[in-house]
Length: 134
Image 1 (cartoon, rainbow, N blue to C red):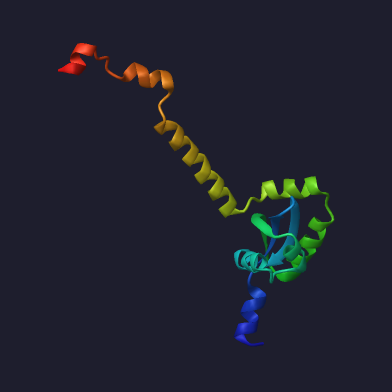
Image 2: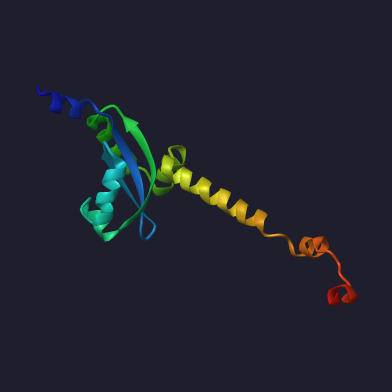
């Protein structure tokens, strides 16, 4: 077996779950879920994702080889929607978690910059009409 062929069989495969338009889910396997997600976005990934465009990768799990990932894909597809979402929560995609964390930090920063109405008025120095004229 050639070195190129051997390296393909030895790399890990990931089972991934996508959130698609219309509140639909898509399950697939790939050695590189981010690259596969880009294919889905362009409409060249799968027939299902052409009709239901993907929004984001919800979760992924690593498997030693394609065979193990395929077996896990089949098992996950047999589950009900709520069980699939529970699976996704336990294996949240790192980028999805990073985006959520950045949004939370941004919200806190915006809140910190905006002074409360009562506090802003209390902090402003009081000036009399005579001081304003000077």
